[in-house]
Length: 443
Image (cartoon, rainbow, N blue to C red; front, side, top):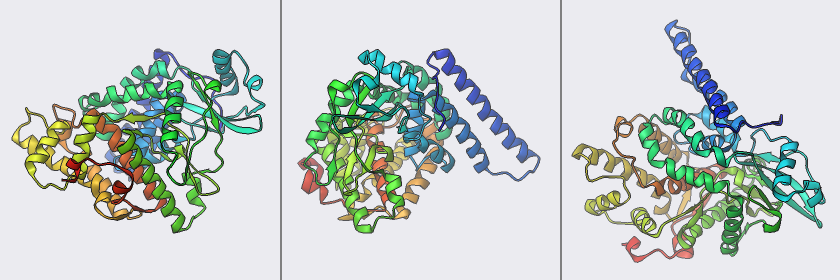
């Protein structure tokens, strides 16, 4: 893959790139509707393919939060047309890498040394590249290391990038920018945290230690003295990313065992730590030669406030059928508002009841078969239904607490990983084995 020798870092340069991309997308729509007007056979798939390619090519050169948003959207297979999902998935670990001179400059900025003066060996080419940074392989004192280097200017461009990417997101999801505004503070805060590599190292070490007892899960060791604001050094974990592992056609027993490890890892974090690895995409997991599950990236961690946790999981685990109790929880979680009309209450109550039903579905049985594509088709169909709902697009309020954004993303991202594994997982009893759910949730 061709390396980039520079990244646009100024607001003007990045805005110009967005404008040019917008013009291309507009041209694609013009071509599409011109063909339809001339009765030339064309499908919306052609339009989606053209737009997805142009948008990804642009964002991959900008990197940073612009590309991160594409990565986040790629995780939501239930909303994106397949063309976008396919292109944006590349942002997870196959973005165009940064050239070596810019990598060397980063080391000189933070360590006042060339990487070859620090490590016994250091690859001049990245072994993989994603939205925020890229990874090089190094050795030191007989150990193989992974060194993650952040792209220049990523943190400085987050807010301006998000303002520019909003029209793309609004059009793709067919929702108002007002609704997007409801969550942009949460997104920008999380993206800023992802650019703080010292915070990432601290969290990585904390969560790794807390989850080290979970059978079959391994974490790299982190090296704070070889890390900085824009550099992270950790052990290199040998193995394959999840998609490459699946291509080896593992047997069902192995698939189920790995799925169980993923499930237990996430349940323990949510309920015991109240903080969760909120970026469950395939590029963040390594399957080792011993079929262990390696967790290699804690850049995006969602800390769950106690009061939100109580309301959210009371809703998720509650066995009550009382509409009054559900209405109270929906208000508490900002799915409903005091000034909603009776029609709005009816629509959003039914809509979010369905969302909660879909999220909780795996918890309602002792074992859940994530290879069941009928469940994921139901997710996709409902997602498509939501993108076409005028009530959501025209709502005066953003629906759902800002905390639901990353927690729902975590659940559905986890479910999609388990679907790719085609794993059957013990779900209901996980709560009893690993977590301390409060009595109110068992009511």
